[in-house]
Image (cartoon, rainbow, N blue to C red; front, side):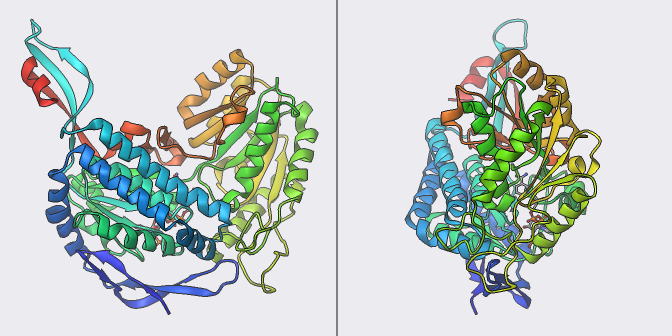
Length: 515
Ligand code: NAP
């Protein structure tokens, strides 16, 4: 049996102690094992600080960007192999796997280009020079400087490639060495990435821990950063971790999100914007079997359109083949783990107690191409409610699977924004309207509750990647329930890994520092 090794302190080690199994979630076949511990994590931190940190300190943004470009190329070179691993270990269809893996490569390339643009310096300007003295000779300038600690990246099971790459791109370009930890259950892809990246990077710049975190965070010190993606209960334990509190370690959290999609009152379902809305809702239910942090969980439609919308969603869902994702005709695979399946089932039961059934019952299906009784399958489930604000399970629990609830409203923009807010903070929400006044009222009121607002309309419909696609040039993260974190957003993504410092002095000296 393949035993996955971690890459720590410059060498590969398989750890020791009991083992956890990585399986194919469609067939339950065991693919590999991971040791539950036995790694020298204190040594890994020391290695990152002393070796990796020094390597990056000697490099310009352009040089670090070049490293990221090489990593993107390595992904392209091994694309088919990575896709096969994601299909086997993640329950991904080929399309799902490409979304994760190509997304990782695109993000690395974006930051490689940004590195080339930022060029040869070590400091980044934050805003324009400011006159703080009586004359222009006495100036002020905010700058970003490389943080001297270690960036610890903890990722969720659903995006083993993209999650690894998006965090890595920002850290390395900012100049911080990384210890990355993928979720154990789907670690095959991240493990292969670690193998591909290792010969392309200076020593100590990237270390990969495969398996549980164990005592990883006990080694944190001043100047370190933790970037976490995962569930809110794990996030809670991180927020109160003794070392994070003791050293004021910067902690970025990407957690649960009850993303909403709202159909504006002016949109006919047959119009371009109406069709975009339908495509986005159904794609988010089925792509990666609904296991996307950005997936639409709550749908709000004008009362008059309710029947038309649910009929159209039902039609589209009924054409989707569910089964072994390695088969060409299959468009939706299983969820990633048995625990995930049980969580989704519990979520459906919670919703069922407060909503009406529209499609898919409780998610029972007979998947194609799978041995009887095997696999962690759940079919798409649509529920409905006429009480969008009062429906507690809809607004307070993320069901991380192919499940969505359609609710109705009058078409009022303020109500639509209040519905977004009812989720208490989301990564993204979308509204579909060609009425600019409606959009302006909605955006102003909804923006404080969302990391990103996606504005669907007839003008952009033909170019839209959908709300579920995270772009490296735009912020990813969200307030409240979504964790309060921010990642990506072009140059903004570097700030997590850099320290902002206000410089005050001779204006010409300040100018020369920035080159
Ligand atoms: P999870 O159980 O919270 O695990 C996330 C990561 O945390 C895994 O790598 C896990 O390692 C690690 N972990 C668990 N306990 C830990 C501890 N005490 N200390 C340090 N690390 C620890 O979440 P998940 O089931 O993988 O992911 C599903 C959740 O992630 C969903 O709720 C979803 O909303 C959220 N998510 C959010 C985003 C976003 O960008 N906002 C993206 C994707 C997913 P092991 O795997 O080894 O246990």
